[in-house]
Image 1 (cartoon, one colour):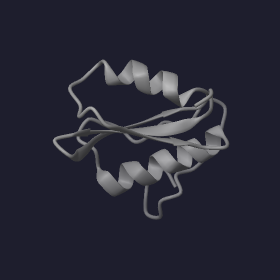
Image 2 (cartoon, helix red, strand yellow):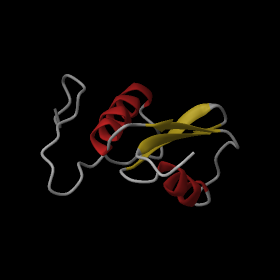
Image 3 (spheres, helix red, strand yellow):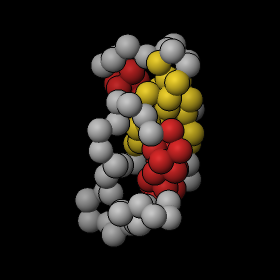
Image 4 (spheres, one colour):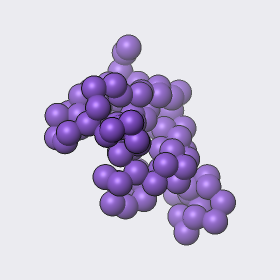
Length: 92
């Protein structure tokens, strides 16, 4: 896997506990984040063709799973005016 934007999902006891994103290198970001908490050993990584698609995927997974370790809605990258793709979200 090369450096690319994407989203990663950590589970704890089989339940989605955290959804994260990198706008440039998802594998490196996932590796950093994994060591910061107690998660199951299996991580799901979704590579995306762009940072925008990574943001959109992260939003969808965040809303679908309501992960306990995500305290806030995914952040929009600085300087962008992207909106959450999930209908009814205050960020959409």
